[in-house]
Image 1 (cartoon, chains in turn red, brown):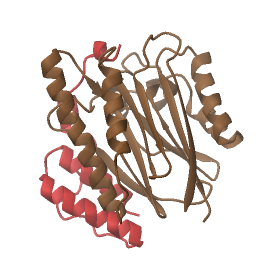
Image 2 (spheres, rainbow over the protein chains, first blue to last red):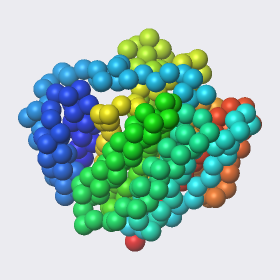
Image 3 (cartoon, rainbow over the protein chains, first blue to last red):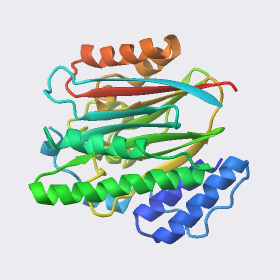
Length: 68
Length: 237
């Protein structure tokens, strides 16, 4: 399965390290290969050792009162 | 594969309005839980817009297209909520977790802290990772997983539909097996009910009773938030 690759890809997109067109293309490939039972090659756009937290997440924190 | 599902929601014991919304469409292979924010006539509107939009999906030929369709609909709601927020001068947003089943695989997309779990061979796994402040504390090693559940910041989320013009949904896929049980839930469940008690309920009860059981556990523990559960069971062909 390509689960970890897919999540890493989504994270790279959230961090704006890849553009939307690349994200959509690579996501489709990974999902199609997962369904076909193929072991996928990591997308070349994913550099090794990327951070585990999305930089974008630190910038859009919602106020507590919005949920109360 | 075939599947069956049940869902339940409760306003809780403190709040006056249920801002959660559930989509339960086994005919499409689409399920969702959305947890709105912004108060009456805002949060409930946001979550309802999301589930209505996903309920209009048509089942495509392959899972990757299914994901694209679902993402498209969620992003369209994001744009509409931002317009509405500007017009009303208030926060109008919602978390979302959606599960798409297609033949022998499923995909799921999410933003915020609504969750997807899977029970397989008696073991419960959380398949989504919260977009929340406490999850960041945990990943940074500042907080243990056990302490995170009851941390005072556990209602601070870091992604939501309607929060920002650029919405990034997380996404993953998984193979399905007969007997798998999937649980979509709002944070009104996990802020009160520990992981092992959720697993125990999923192991012990048939779907309708399990849904009631999980809701009751959240209420018995305080019911401080709206609580929603959607249970999906994968059946043999």
